[in-house]
Length: 336
Image (cartoon, rainbow, N blue to C red; front, side, top):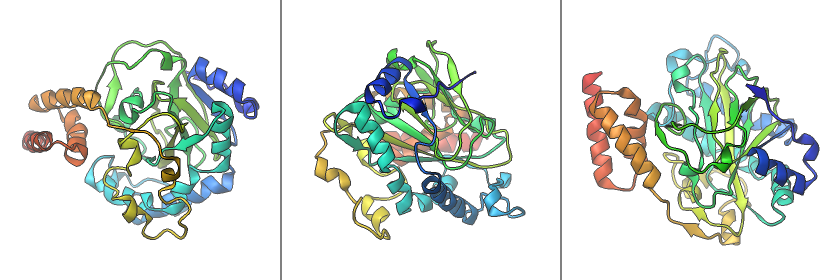
């Protein structure tokens, strides 16, 4: 892979940022956020996963050494039981509103920014290549305006071998690609050829990768012995539509009222109401395709379908699909 093109020198030039994003589909920016702000959230994540048994008790918590006997991944119940304890943390939500991020998008957009209520935190166990996120596009999960942008923030120094992120340069200009069911975050993998050289690199705390919702990107295998923690937050112009899914808290983490219950400040509670965004229904056509593939795989005894089936049971609003997915999970258990 080639190294990221560094856009740090463009950070004060909104037009140049927009031009490079249009060309490459991503921006790599050093020191976008103060180290202390990111490290604080990283410490809280380590506290939660240590309490959940995900770190090796034979090492200091600060080392972040994984307990490989506790390996799990979203959307497994064992993962969500620990993950939701972090998702309610006020500081984790406040980080996506950091003035440096908002100012970046205000310069790039030239207008008001909407911060998506939904954000995603990733926790990647090491030495488990089957759980590495496959090449995919975020748009099928986000929807709303295609001009939505993810800010990916590692919560600790993250050399590439620790399971960073890679982007396919220029792949955002080619529409939605066909995909199949896969393991890893998102649960899908692009299957058709696409143009774009892979770019990756090392991250320090405070560095950020910003990319377009149509950009094809993937995880890198975590070949260390440490956990990799990161946050994905998403941004768009305030006058463009956002989908219903992006207005909700992460599946399995409760309602916003439940998440807000122990917060010390009211400043960020339901902050989006003041902007009155245009909310569009979520289009299930992409998930229906994913789910048809998963059902067919499960009928053949292919355990790769398990994560997709769990997502249906936990998140799909249609009872008939949830019932069918439950039956398919039971079938996989019987054939395991």
